[in-house]
Length: 395
Image (cartoon, rainbow, N blue to C red):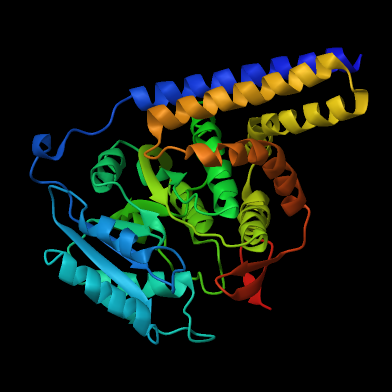
């Protein structure tokens, strides 16, 4: 009976992987915007607001990618740094010297509770500076995001579609330097496309990915902007709710960006995994409809199957269960390689591929653990308790 149950789970996993892969294939076949030379000259002016918080990642590479952005319309960039962050300010000056044509507006932000301003405090400071600029489109982007050269073209083209109020992209993690960074990159790259894209075939997105998102300024202001967000840490989820409340929808775009996150220990990796799932549990789940909750659960439940098959194989020690487990890992690997080769901007280093298989078994356990853990998270040296509904308290 255990073997038959294992084969049943394998059949479910096969259906899950193939259906999701086909959804991704259809999504990307819908096409991308035209090349810059083929676009009209009257593209909407764009302002990028970029909070920078003493990034432990390769900020120089991130800023160099921002300097290489190609957009046929007017594009202005605003960098928001902490007042006392002399190291980051010197780095910004160095990148400006390397790219003389890149002249961002640099804004200094003061933290309400310390020398490091929160992301929302930096966003508000950047938004205040952007009021004097001509940006019809506002784009907020984190300091560990390596944008592709055509990022603004993809975002603005999708933002122009009828009924769209906000647009966002898809993450590809690019750091494989340590085993912990490899585990994180493997987790994201094996799940991002297969989780976010198939969902859009059944329901409208109910939130936006906080790495990089954009709005028309008029829509952003009509939805309330950043007003009354003091004491919150869920800017992306709250802004998504506000946009949807206006009757407009959220749009998942095919803009794939790089994320260069460095992890030097198991603890740093585990801390981020916990943060990722405490946030939605506290700030997003209370606002989701039963249908959205059910769809999210069903869409991710398949990730547990390889681990369950391994447990069945260890308990039963039957050849059939071991074969079912091996087949599930083979199917996982096949779909992972296809997604990576077809849609992601980076390849997994050959020596790091075993960590991809480890992640397939380990990450689902960590997700379940994080969903039932306490509410305290860590972010760049700061400890805070995430309150139900999206608020926080410093620990």
